[in-house]
Length: 150
Image (cartoon, rainbow, N blue to C red; front, side, top):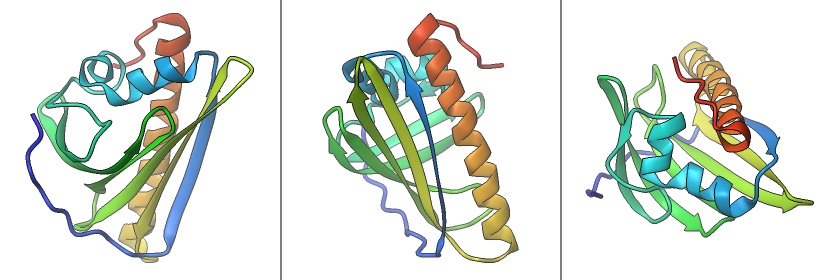
């Protein structure tokens, strides 16, 4: 169930991008990335909805949770959301994009908005590591049905 939450977006200059190629069609990867029941199989422990349309969705990892505000979605191409990044008070913007080629799908995740200070740099590095792990989990699940969550 989507609820209305408006997050204040950070506008700092610190950003990063990480990506991976997955041996699965874009339609399958899109479903795994955006549909709550699939997300809770490989990434979260639960969700309140899907990430494929504007609105707010709560994502759970055990007892902790985060509200994400989906601001844009282009079916099987990309989606963007805001969420409050680790260790900072304002929301960063996450863009997830897909590109298909020869039966493979490239998933690119970019996140931006941190201030160029200690808290912003530490938070950005924390998130970069987290998204790299996320892509490994997605690849293992999409290609082999293996759940890497601890």
